[in-house]
Every structure is written in C-alpha cells, then in structure tokens.
Image 1 (cartoon, rainbow, N blue to C red):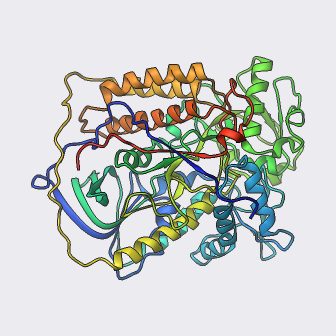
Image 2 (cartoon, rainbow, N blue to C red):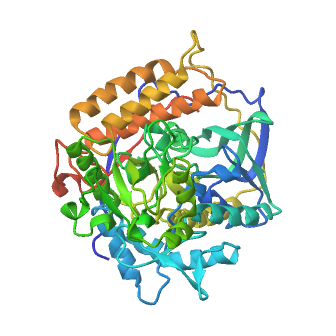
Length: 552
C-alpha cells in the first residue's frame, strides 16, 4: 500500500428546518409488510445485492420508477477491470489513486480492483453480452487509464445490457418480489437501529415495510444541477433519507462533472461517452483550435476534473457557450458501429458525428459523496447497508476514474447482499410492527410552485457549486437554500414532486455546506479563492452527521 487510510474529520451541521420524517404516520393507520431483507433501488447495485442474498431469505426490492429506468441503464462507457495480459492490478490501482487526487482509501482501491475480473466474468455467466472480437473481449480506454481495460456492450449501451441480464436473473429468484413505481420516503428507525422504510406505492398506497436488514441502493443526485447527464429520477432521495435518519455522510462536496455533454440549447442533455475520446476524438474550441494539450500532457485522456475545467476555461476565453468534439479523422463506419446510441442522439439534431463537430459542455454526472460505508458495505446505522452511487466508500477519492462506477456497484452490491444476508440469518423469525408514530410538523397553508423552486435550485447549484466555486457564491447559495428550506422542508406533501424537492434541498444544503468548509482545490472541488491543494489541513475526508434528529 502507498499510504495508510486517510484521517476522518467529523463535522455536524444539520440542514435547516429538516424534520425527521417527510410524512406523518401511525402504525394503527397504515398497511404493513414484513420481509427479511428490503432492497431500495433497482439499479446494478441493488440487483447485485439480491443475487448475493441467501435464497432461504425473503427479499423485497422496491424501485422508484420501472426497472429499466435506473441511472445504471444510462451508463455508456463500460466497466473497468484488469482483463488483458498486458495490464496489471498495480496499473489500475495507480490510475485510480492518481485520478482521485490523493484522497482515495488505498485499501478500498486495492480490494475493488482485485475483485473486478471475477465480477465481470460473473456478468457474462448471467448472460451479459460484452463486445468481442475473435472470442476475446474488446477493451476500450478512457480518460485517466494507462491501459485498455474497459469492457463495453453494444458499443455504447453497456449499462442497458448489464441491467437487462441482471433483471432477468433477479426476476427468476423465487424468494424475491419486485415493486416498481414505489417511492421510498424514509428509513424507519428505533433505538438506533434501521427497521425498514416507509414506502408509497402507486398500486398499494403508503406502507410501513418492516425488514430485518435494509440495503440502500438509490443512486445519485445529478438533478440538483441545471446541466446534468442524469435521468429525472436522480434527486438524491437515498442521500436525504439516510441523512434524516442520522447516518454518517462523507465527501458531500465532491460532485463529478462529465466534460462532454451534448449541448443543444433548449433540449435535454445527452451524455457523450468518454470512450469517444478514448477512440481518438479531439476537443476543439469555436475557432477549431485543439486546446487540451495546453492543459495536460494526456490531452483529451486526462481525468474528468481536468478536462471539465479546461473546457470551462476555453468557453470563457472564447466567449462561447460550448466547445466541440471532432471525430472527423476517425473511420466513419467504425464510429457508427462503436457508438450507435450517440450517433442516433446527435442525428436527431441533424449532426453527423462522422463529419460534423459535436457541441459539448460539462454537466453534473456522478455523486462521489454519500453514505459512508466500510469495506463490507455497512453504514453507521445498525441494520442498514448501502451500495452504488448513494455511497462514499473511499474508492473514488476527490475524482472518480472513468468506468470505476459500475465496478463499485457490483463489488459493494455483492458485499451488501452478503453482509445483510449473514445478519438476517442470525435474527429470529419474529415479525412485528414497532409502535412508532410521527406527527405532522406543519400542514400546508398555501400552495407552492414546486417546479419554480426546483428550477431555481438547479440554476443556483449550477452557478454556485459547479465546475468552479468560490466562497462568496457558496455563501449566497447557502442563504438561498436556507430560505427555501424554511418554508418547504417542514411541510407535509402528498406527492412525489413535493418529496423530491424536499430531498433535493436537503442534499443541496449538504453539498454547499461541505464545499464551504473545504478551503482548498482538490479533484472535482475547484475553489477559485483557494486554488491550491492543502495537504496540511485538508488531506482528510469530511463526514457530516445530522445532530438534530427528531422523532423515533
């Protein structure tokens, strides 16, 4: 190992006006469900957890939307692992540490990378069709990687193919029920233990789900930003519910921005995979000037934080709303076969990616911060495990290496499933509803324009906590968010739109507060008023805990 695990700095600063639960409940007035293990989230992490659980235990998997709408299904690039004889674990390990800006946990990095090949082979055994040539996996290369080690499927549809195969495998489990369109409002806790969750189902109404063990796999929070690659469902629900339950949250200042998001004014944003640059595409500004070699010797294959900052700088220097990806020097047939989804997305706007420059700019992509877990995916709350983008494991440090995210989902999903399974087997089959109740904090007195507040929040986060930040903008954002929290968080809503906004405000506060505290620049956290890294004071991870818990 290169260095010991980094020290942890504990801070406690509750989000203003945040109640313990989003909704009032009473066990005599609600329907109940009992299960051995509750899995919240239907992406790759949640599915992998299900496949690791003892078949003698009952599983309930609840997902906010339909199973094929998780953020995992939008992953284009692939999954990284040492799968070629020319590569070594040490190479992947070092690439991850370098990209993470010296804030990764080396022991976690080593564990995840060494487990990677077996997990990828397991996906193949479950029916995932990765791209091959002559019986061997085709391995791509992305920013920050020193070797070709990214397995991909159907060119740029890796997440969708993995999800397909895993849904088929989980659906075949006789001990597993799947509830789609089921919004999890909060974790149920009693005596410092997670007892399950409050879930609002489209078909069943509101239920109290009591579980021996609970696994949180709710994904990210990209919808907090005006510019994002994330689907509409990525509103930080898991981050917020864990925080309300008193779970330790780590690294909340680190939101990763993907450098290349298709930018067409007025349209939704589409990811342009890093693999495009891995295959030889270059970045040019409005004048056709290739600028990346000025910023880093790795040029277009520098880590994402470096490329995102370079693009923002170049946009500012040229007074233009975007830069451009140029693939015109690559073989047209190869490009269309390698990137069919990107080709189709651009063609809708009359862009031929084989000859036209593709307008791109950064967008919020991956939430590095989240629920703090140990190597077994155990959280600080007894009975609660977590995996996927909702966690902060120490793998990514201050900047995630491309295609390490699906890998983390698999490794920690498996660990969470195994750990929850062991714990549940040790508990007696004695199911009962706890006599917990929570009264309404404040009933709505006047209607709110939820869409307007949500749009204002997204714009504020993009302006104040985006690729570049400074103390003044962060302070202004804190004032705005505190004001919105004051009249939104105490309310009792009866719709998903209201609950999502409350979650988004809570997570936004945590991001802003943590960003204000870290007075240095590191990885994706770029403070223009503190432009250098400060190892003396900030070679550590911030952990935030809600010290203002109310209710049971």
